[in-house]
Amino acid sequence: MSKLTGKVAVITGGNSGMGLATARLFVKEGASVVITGRRQKELDEAVTSIGGKIVAFRGNLVNLADSERLRSFVLETYGKVDIVFANAGGGALGPFGTVSEADFDKTVNLNLKGTFFSVQSLLPAMNDGGSIILNASIAATKGFPSFTVYSATKAALRSFARTWTTDLAPRKIRVNTLSPGHIVTPVLMSVGFTQAQSDEYWESHGTRAPVGRAGQPDEIATAALFLASDDSSYVTGIDLPVDGGVAQV
Image (cartoon, rainbow, N blue to C red; front, side, top):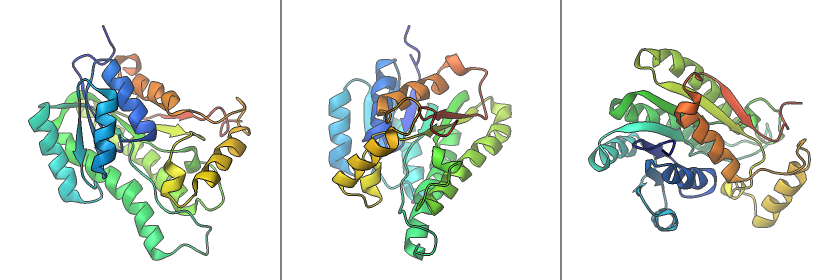
C-alpha cells in the first residue's frame, strides 16, 4: 500500500518548485491533493502535468476571506483534511538600512500572516491525528546578507511549530518544520532576481554545501512525505533541515 492512501493533503503554493514536486509525490503515494496558488494558468498546468486525484484552488491566502474559501473548497471537494503542507511564501530582499515599509509588509504578510491564517482556517476541517508541515528555511538560523526580514519570518515559522505542537497535542496533530537549504526553484525571481542571477546564485551557493551542490525540489518532497506519513508517527515539534549540510557544520 502507498504511504498516503486515503489521505487528503492541502499544499499551499503548489503550482511550482517545492510545492509542485511535493504534490506530484503525494498523488503518487495515494493522496487526494489540493494545491493553491494565485495564477490560474500555472495551477492548470500543474494539475494537468500531475494528473490523478489533484485539484487546484486559486486565491491569495494573505487574505483571510480566501483562506476561509479554501476550507470550504476542500470540504466540498474531499470532505476532510489530513495533511497540510504550508509551503507558500516569498517576499522582498534587502540589507538592513534599505528595507522599505512596503517590502517589510509584503514579506511578513506572505510568510507569516498567510501561513498562520491558511493553516488556522483549515483546522476545523482537519482530522485528529493529522500532520502539519511548515516550509521554513535555513535562513532562520543563518545570517545571510539582505535576508533580514525574510530570515526573521522563517524563524517565526519555527516558533509556530513549537507552540502549535503543544496547542494541538490534545488532537494528536503533529506539527513540524522543514528547513530547505539552497534548492533550485523559481523563488529568487519572485523576490527580484533575474534568471541569470538566480542561476549564478544556486551554482555558487550550492558548491558551499558539504555535498557539493544545490538541492532539487524532489529532495524536499521526499522529506515532506516522511513528515506527512506514518513513518514519522513519533515525530512532532522538530525542524528538519534539508540543506546538504550547509547550515549544520
